[in-house]
Amino acid sequence: MSSPTVLASTLIDAKFVDYLIILLYFGVVMGIGLLARRQVSDSLDFFLSGRSLPAWVTGLAFISANLGAVEIMGMSANGAQFGLPAVHYFWVGAIPAMLFLGVVMMPFYYGSKVRSVPEFMFRRFGTGAHLVNSISFAVAQLLIAGINLFLLGSIVHALLGWPLWVALIVAAVIVLSYITLGGLSAAIYNEVLQFFVIVAALLPLTLIGLHRVGGWDGLTDGITKAADANPGTVAPAADQLNSWPGNALTGFTSDFWSVVGIVFGLGFVLSFGYWTTNFVEVQRAMASNSISSARKTPIIGAFPKMFIPFITIIPGMIAAVLVTDIAKVKAGEAVAGGASGEGVTYNDSLLLLMRDVLPNGLLGVAIAGLLAAFMAGMAANISAFNTVWSYDLWQRYVVKDRSDEYYLLVGRIATVAAVVIAIFTASLASNFSNIMNYLQTLFGFFNAPLFATFILGMFWKRMTPTAGWVGLVAGTVSAVAVAFLSEDAFGSWSTGAIPIGGQGASFVAAGAAFVVDILLSIVVSLVTKPKEASELRGLVYSETPREDLVDPDEAARPWYQRTLPLAGIALVLVIILNLIF
Image (cartoon, rainbow, N blue to C red; front, side):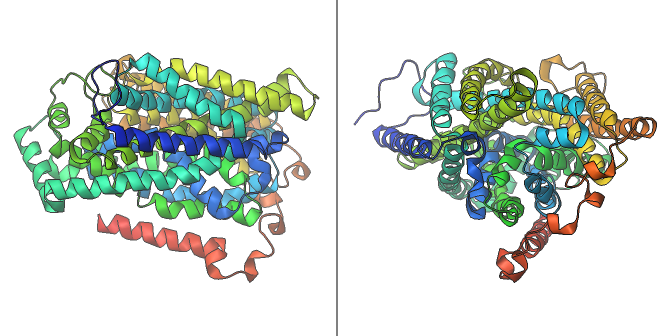
């Protein structure tokens, strides 16, 4: 049977069986939304799933919420452009921070019964820091949701040939429907389903792609030949086939500064800033049914996370060898077409590889997997945005002391508004050939200063409320300044005054935000009045009794159900992976 009629030429030649698989998947997604709706009776159900979910569910949702459009398309783009150094976003730039979140920070979040990270900031620092954090977080989620929506719309455009603006609207309506119906429960249960669909889609792509290119040896030979044929344009093969020192990724010519940038800028500031203070992730753990489950949520997520490079980065590397258009882009040539219709970019690596190596049927599964990933990422952004908007901004500063039903309605309206705004912020993402450049720049703006304020305030009781908001503002401003002065950090808007290419500019911007925030917070704290120690229980480590931070029943459970043994195993595994590569 022929494929459905399209409005323009399509990038992907899908057949009837592919469309059938995609439609069946969407039917299941909408069904989950309808079922979850029955469980939504109040705002706690809508925003935090009533704190009723087991650790394995929240753990998979935790990693699936991150395994969205940016993770899959962005990391495959990184693989195509930079090669193996992109694994640092996982083994250095994710796992250690995830383990720290589970072992150290989740007890504070969960035990304090806050509904969001900004609410925690309010209790620790008061109105100033809370307002700055709430606004910056809300803006960040709208921008990042736009990235997910842009890539989701690109898939629809590639599949059906619709104009990109039509594809964006259709994609937005689909995501909006199931979040509005079921709130966070719908998002989380769909994220668990989407995790398995994504793996089922990308694992065959990796295996078939490796077979086509002649295995790992064939892949390394292809990368070496391309590098030798295009010196000065393509990074040397040695830089692409070894994760350290990562010069291709950071843009630094010095091995030493490249390692410093990866370890400090990515592995500490950006990574810990994202994983420990980003409410999109923390919200999943806060939906757990106990403090023990909340602590294990990011640790359970760490196990699949460390193997995601094999189904995202490796396919990108394969695409740079097998897909002619990507090879041309890597050699500096302009190629017409692409998923956006405005020229092939590294963001198209995975789509073009799917087109070239997957048979029909399996192609439908892969497309469903991509759609699943993009919806998971956008749903995570939107569900976190509506919580912060409703609780931390609307209820606290605009309309106070109204009924629970009122704030539930506000949350649903905020969801609709956020999706509409994301349609417009999606246009910003189209300016970047590698979407990870844009994303890491945003993280430097919003997450790096927040982490500095958070970590200092959690471990230093002398830090004052004034220092909280002053540090956040100063850190954000310094990150923005460095980004605009760099070569590539903010696309065509960057000035190039600081000669840093690659993604090293975002590492430097994040490092600057962290250092400025810490130093200024210390200075301001020393000349302003701190809170009384009695007000800091559950908010500062030294003022919180140990019994408030642990589940008393966990010690009696088997080792594989306890937080610390699981974290220790994950840490050993990720060290082994770093040594192997």
